[in-house]
Length: 78
Image (tube, rainbow, N blue to C red; front, top):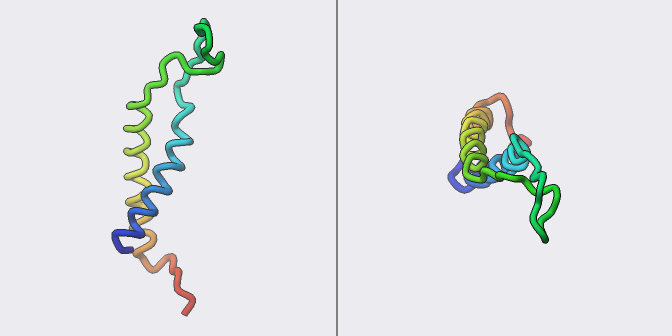
């Protein structure tokens, strides 16, 4: 895996994990102000979610990197 394909694989993993992590620990705002959505989170904790996403993505990328570079999975047809 070269640096460009590694970057692409990491980005795909990161965005997939982000959408899986975003709903964790979200509490609904019980008294929204005028013009606010009733389903909007009271405290979004964006930095927590971004940090957790990055940590999980690094672990998954390391696993994917070793799996792709091993002889267990091959993408060549020959």
